[in-house]
Image 1 (tube, one colour):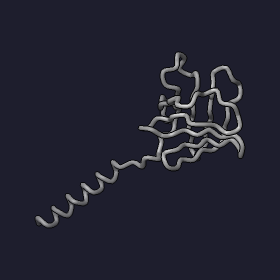
Image 2 (cartoon, one colour):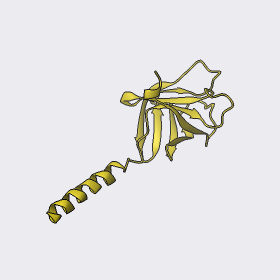
Image 3 (cartoon, helix red, strand yellow):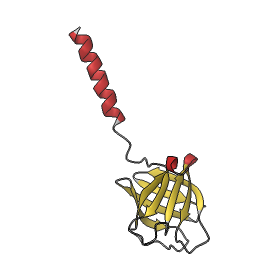
Image 4 (cartoon, rainbow, N blue to C red):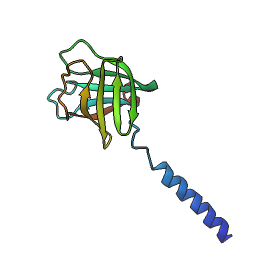
Length: 123
């Protein structure tokens, strides 16, 4: 009986431990807004299902890049096409802007974006 209890408890703690270990390259879907901006919607990144995104680089621009994103080695890459892309480093579930492709950026390197609304909060 003690052996069965030991096995069950070991299994329980193993599952509990593994379920608490989220991969470091996973991000919640939703809207990441520029941290410490005077206007909340000044700039933001929407991460959507099926690895889709929308990127609002500045409140005064009408062009909002859209496309697909990938996550690899704690790096989020937003790709619009082969020439236009944006790279963020993932740090403690925030996005830190690192660089862009051939399109001039309106975002300074090092700017931090944090999750404001997860996808289940939009409605």
